[in-house]
Length: 143
Image (cartoon, rainbow, N blue to C red; front, side):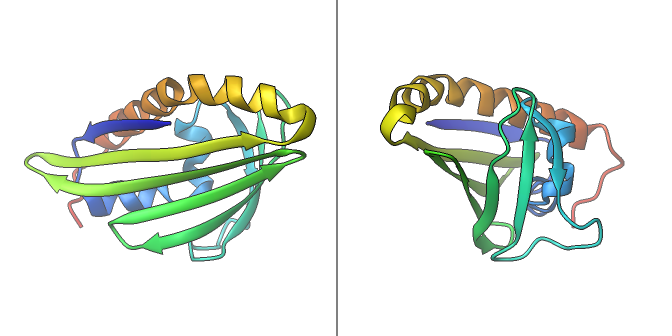
């Protein structure tokens, strides 16, 4: 699955917002909540649990964190695993965020995971566009 979105803020601003799990319910439509300490800053190896709107509660972990360039998470729930990488590039007037991911399932979870993976690119693009709108509505911070 892949999606690319342009945002009206710098890569640094988008990176700081998108890699912080505490912000996820604000821009990710499938999430109801995240369970992460409120004062914990994003870091390599950071772990948290999400609760989705359909009741799935994956365990998540940041597996790559290169400031303002790349952030990768891995999530697991029962027989399903997912990896999502966000790549950030400054462009004139803002930044480009490219999402690349993979969703796999084993056993009884193989078919549902495959079906969900087919729809994921559109959902990721929509969520990233929403994040861009949220960030674009905030006072300008190019740091």
